[in-house]
Length: 177
Image (cartoon, rainbow, N blue to C red; front, side):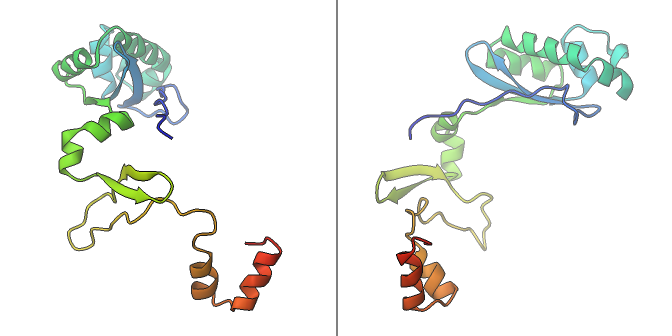
């Protein structure tokens, strides 16, 4: 508890790599992740490469490593803010990737009530993701954290499955539930 798993990067040279888009996270200077999802010619132009060498799907596929390595190095030399400014100028759709801590502290997420606080019997107040998306007529609600082991046995076995008290006791006697 209290530890944040770091985000992992992705590459454009995966088997599911597709034409006209380079989707992946790259680590910027200043320890923030940036994600770019753009047309391949825009990547080439941003990196100072000849766009004509990436005009067709076959050319893009053949040059995918060059693009991925180039973009990874380019992003690593800049802060997330610098990347954002340059991406905008190059008409690249991109954004900084938020960590869980960024999301928890972001005023937009707070205003949208995307993070809620729920009381947990063992941990006390726990901040967690709300039900998303928010529907007006069926908003949904986070009403508890995960239950303790066996906490819902009576509900599931007796009420939902219709087992009698003796049947449930027999299962519990043999550590089946």
